[in-house]
Structures are given as structure tokens and as C-alpha cells.
Image 1: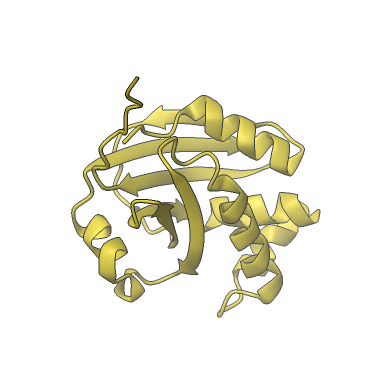
Image 2: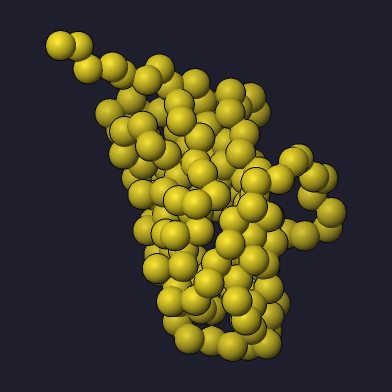
Amino acid sequence: MSEPTPFRLSRCFTQLLGRKVTFVQSTFALDMHIRQMYGIYTLLPQEAAIIVKADLPLLGSFAGALVGLPDAAVKEHLRATPLEELMRDAICEALNIASAAITTEGRAVFTKLVADPAYIDGAAGKVLKSPDHRSYFTVSIDGYQGGRLTVLSPFVPVRTVSS
């Protein structure tokens, strides 16, 4: 499977949010005490799963920029437990639109957002436990807090067109 590129992700989120978003390829880093969220996608037509694991503050920044909240207000909204509907809906919308940039093979369809990996099962659970591909990114957003985002995916053979 072709891995997502920093250029494609940067362009997708910059267009979505109307402000400069930069994805830079990075290496694995331990989850230091930053709460993580998991976006789960179904890859069609293969019926495979892709998972986007991201820092909650980063997803909150995507949501805040999308709905017009300043960075300070985003941080306040993220303190609520459970996550407020406004923030959750905006995060889901950002992840839904990102489906166009997280894969170049087939079509990724955003299916759900979870805060606890215990709720990830089936094909997505297998990918979470043992992904064939891992793409790590450090993300910055003009005027907002950035963070880390990881795309986890299975091996999907590339289909070739025969003549």
C-alpha cells in the first residue's frame, strides 16, 4: 500500500482549515502523557482497516480551526470529559475529509472515532496490534498547537492495470 505523503496531508488540511498546516515525516516517539484519539477507516474495495492515531490537542486544533475557535478556547474545550459534542463533531469532520489524503490505494471511508484502544476490534484491532505500515508525522498549524499523528495500515497489494 502506498503510504500517505507529508505534501498530500499538508495540502488537504491547509485547504480544509484555511490556514497553513505542515506535516513533516518523523520517527517513532513514545506517547508521553498526551491523550491519544483513534480515527478508524475502512479501505474499499479491499475491506481493510486504516487507523489514524493522533494527539488529542492536535485533533482539537483541527476542530478549533474548522469552527473558528481560538487556540486558548480549544484548550478549554478539550478539558471537558466526555469530549464536548462541538469538538467531537468537528474532529470527526476533519478526519472524514482527511480520508482523501491518508491512502492512495482504493478509497478510505471514516467510520468512527474512539478515545480508548480497547474499543478497536475486528480488522482495525488487528492493524492496531500489528500494522504492516506505520507513517509518523509531526504536525504544525499556524496559530494553533500542533502535535503528532500516526497512520497505521495493513499490507494491501497494489493493483496494476493490464493492457
